[in-house]
Amino acid sequence: MDTLSKPEEAPPALQRRDYRCLLLDMEMNTQKEWGLEFLRQALAANPLLPVIIVSGASTIASAVQALKLGAYDFIEKSGNIDPEKIAATIHKALERQRLMLDRLEKETLYEELPQNDLIIGKSPALQNLVNEVRKIAATEATVLIFGESGAGKELIASAIHQNSNRRNQPYITLNCAALPHELLESELFGYCKGAFTGANHDRKGKFLAANGGTLFLDEIGDLDIHLQAKLLRVLDDKKVMRLGEDFFQPVNVRIIAATHRDLKKMLPDKFREDLYHRLNVISLYVPPLRERREDILPLAYHFLKKFNKENNRRVWTLHRQAESVLVNYSWPGNVRELKNVIERLVVLSEGTEIKVEEVLKRLDEKPPFAAAAGAVPEKEPEPLREASARFERDYIIKTLNRFSWKITETARALGIDRTNLFRKMRDLEIHRP
Image 1: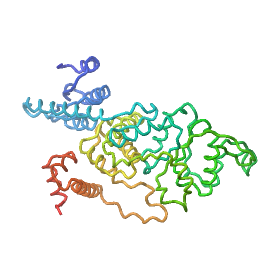
Image 2: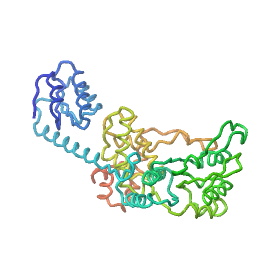
Image 3: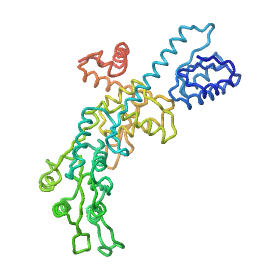
Image 4: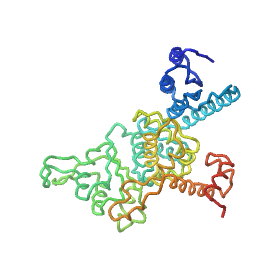
């Protein structure tokens, strides 16, 4: 333990030693801004360092500002300071630091998969999927990937290619839902100069561009029924004819397709049965995030670090209750939605820790495109306090139902104690049915 009496001794000491906790007297220097500046330096050097502010009546405003900058707590000088109170505060600060470090270590990376496409999580469902990817990657089999939008089908497709014998060959992707029928055909098979108006140069097309490698056809369920016949012919004959040409060129391409649709229900009117069986040699199911809740926090902390770095922010952790909300949310948009929410939280949060109120607010927000043409106009927005209370009430009831109204288990899942849960149930008028 070091005790410093001169302000100028503090910065060198911070560089010289790796402290576990910092007790900072805001009146150590006559310039009030000195304490805030030193706090910034300390947190820049060690973002997880718990800093406890000691302040007199004249520096309370600065202490409050210090909390916003990331200080753990402040103790007011009022007569004699109770040593036991200081010791208890330091103990709590160190315990919080330990929990934060534990949470940051929750991120599990499957190093067996390609370094540029790490799959993050530790759930049994994800482990089984990774094992399947590892087994089929070295084969030449066509793969059909099922799963909800945003679940990570593109990541799995890329992982298959990167672990295959074709890893050093082209990996070409095409979203079948992103282009109209006329453009999609030329994108798939290519064209030669003069094939149609505007064809001012030769174009290979995705099949020829992927020759020797892998072609990933995303949202294959949206492919036009007429194009499905042409695709099937290429898969069977391993030859492709560009628009405007009268001869075929051989292609050696591995096909990986993906869809969020139930293709079986589309047979045979909207999706050709012969193409379905041709694509469905190996099928993989990417489970939605709500079916692998163990992966939510590792993903959240992965995105937290990613967006801190990209946006030059210092939002280092999630409050325990905020973590609980994320874990128990249904995530209809899956990993893509979680990524979007964490990015907004990092950009808009004011402190170094994301509070539960911030998470509730972001999850309750409606996307700006919700009131599109033909949609029912949204009602006048309600005050934030009322909206948060309504969301919190619905969320607590949902969690209570999930645990059959067992108070202890529900409180543990919410990250609060039983007394706090009872108080919230009373205040929000939640009654057991």
